[in-house]
Length: 107
Length: 111
Image (cartoon, rainbow over all chains, first blue to last red; front, side, top):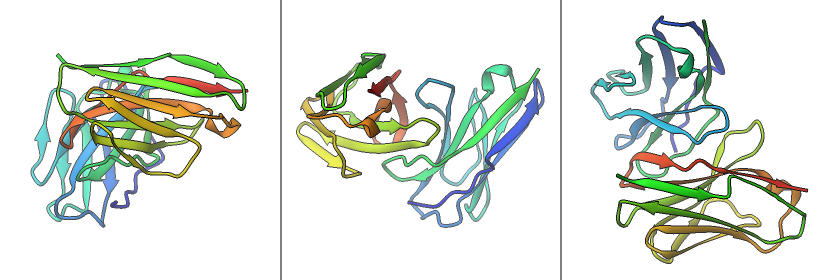
């Protein structure tokens, strides 16, 4: 499994953009980059995934570096409901969760 | 649409008692099934995964076992619970490698 490095925590204000970084320098060529988030006392929720190109969906955008050794999850306008632990997971197959980034959103 | 059911939501069991947690999936065929555990203040740990009926892979040696008697049923068991088995147990399914869907979890407290 590729090793990932994410900030332990980040803070944002409501309705501001949030950029959550992830370093995965040992990613293999076949690994997809998955992002999940977990709200308190709930199971993780799929956010987005990508391989090489940037990806957009209704929840977020994923920007992948050209060398694929890092990626950034972008929440365009943070809401209080976006407060969660965000996990970046390079994987082809089983998902192995690290410690993630605790995102706090201030009103 | 696909749904995943996991029960019970909470469970308090004495040390040495048996455990059986059940997870069922609806609306899909031949899913990959997973059991994860999250100890208090810790990350999610993959315990078992299954790619088909009767096929179980264990990720971490421990006091637990898993079985998949039917295509969409995944069971987590223990013969004798330990205090260290306490945690938040999550079942998940996927078709291929995309979009894991997690259940609502079972919070197990061993006393």
